[in-house]
Amino acid sequence: QVQLVESGGELVQAGGSLRLSCAASGRTFNRYHMGWFRQAPGKEREFVARINWNDLSTYYAISVKGRFTISRDNAKNTVYLQMNSLKPEDTAVYFCAATPRVIQAVIPKGYDYWGQGTQVTVSS
Image (cartoon, rainbow, N blue to C red; front, side, top):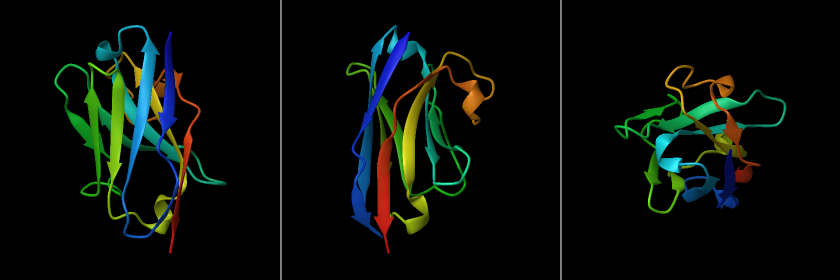
């Protein structure tokens, strides 16, 4: 089992920045690929970013590439999402997720463990 707790979400103006954190506990965090997803009201949960545990390779949704950066600190069992140049359409609940698998990297069912989410609201 892996327990995940997100933090850092808040209300921010368009153009601003936020850093989300996801603290993990339980099994060996450094052997899990970590992802960030988001879900806006009335919409499906969508992929935002992923970082692999073995080579630290990263992947981003087109909508956030160049603005968001995912990183991880294995010594602290924490994964981060730095979000810059925020837009109103980034408003959503942001979830972190963990998986030991390489496949299905950008869809929710590819992940076994989820946090409870943190709300990000971007005002125009």
